[in-house]
Length: 158
Image 1 (cartoon, rainbow, N blue to C red):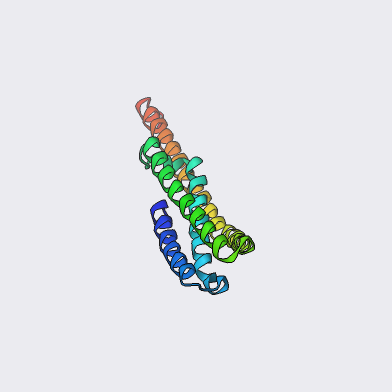
Image 2: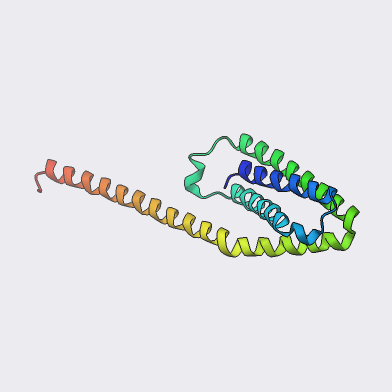
């Protein structure tokens, strides 16, 4: 997932939450929407962490560091703004204890995503690192053997 997708998913859930809170829906009825928003927020946070320390093979194909940093900064500020507004709405309509419930849901969602999705992504990154490293090693070894072969052939050893 990319930051724009996370922001889009979070914005959709945010609008639904605001509408539900405004109409007086109970916070328990909004559990799936809160989970969706929490998942998008968690995914964005994970992407932000991954961009700070990307795999070496991704660094060759990404845009400029300044462009990436500005994009993440803008999206982060938008996500923080949505989070603050959701907190204010929930705290105002349902009280501070309702926000604590939201935080518990969010923490559970983040833990679940970390165990499932982020771990799989880390394993995939490791597999790609090993594959690309092996290919570079094999190409280097092949090039060295080719050079040695031609040197030996030129000297009449083959």
